[in-house]
Length: 433
Image 1: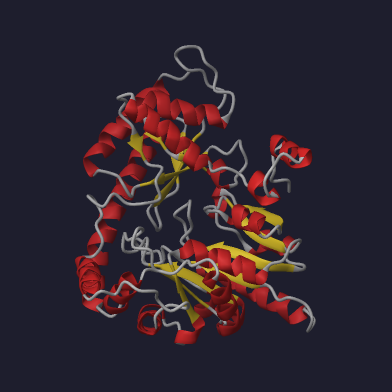
Image 2 (image 1 turned 180 degrees about the vertical axis):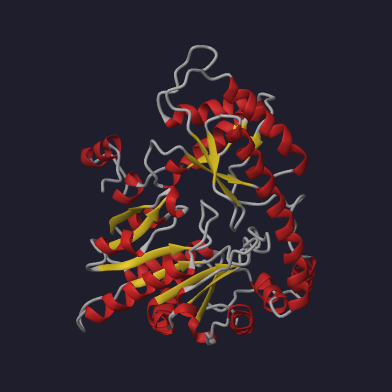
């Protein structure tokens, strides 16, 4: 699949350019939308901003116990370089945390710490993939297209659908398996807030194991990157499943990425970890040591202590999850009411994370001023301009440009503004002809 624009390619061909990577890297649709939102707010417009995959600390603060440990760590002057692989005490705490919470058994030398999930994902791609290697990922999904571009891999995109809650199936993935080296999975998923069902993930694991059995000694194996950044944020009867818990043999072929970023509203604290086969973890460490993507020393010391405080963690998560779930459910119910009224919207019932998958299917309709909404981007602009509603289109996550689905994030949502947002949306949609 082509991932460069003609204008970008022209720059490369003329020689008046920088590196091929820099010139062909696709800009972020989210950043572009963010610029438009800031301009609207600057002009005095009321904007309901549901685009940010982050938290407003005034609404969702980090756990008090974690905050206290960070302060204490700085008071004790833990401000020097940490170990390249992460401090030993933190990796030991992560190992204990994984055993307690997920039943996963990883030794400290199978764990790598970094400043959040991004450098770990980058390090994994760099460790496993070479130029021309096939990399499988579903769309919509977060940033897999960019990481594949970094390593000049072959993009094997799986178009996930609403019927499967935008989660890929083994049937979807199977045609791409031959000679692929990475299968990137995420559950709970960003941007959809949906999760793998047990049977679906079991089928995928069985398929990966069978594929690797067929590969020769000199051939690269197929590795699963399993991003479970939101795994503690599931709601109702939804349960989180992971590859190694379902199939023990998957431990040889799976690298997990996790962090305190989302489950503890600590996106700015910058402590994440990967766990997987020691050989891969060591190579990732070697690559990241040249980048310097370490989690700060004081924060590592703090997280090492916090992860052992089971009561404090559970108390925080109980309140945090109830607050996030309330927002997701209330907005979902509002969309279902609008749908019942005959407006062109839909939504998938919330399952996990901080995201609600919504649909606004208004292409082909006409605004009050006579402007036609010819394509989905026109609908996105109309929502922002007429309803003051800012949400991220799935096409910003690799879905087709005509996708009518969106990510709505509640990380900065004020409960008291939900009804007024829904009313503003209703008013805007009722003006369409």
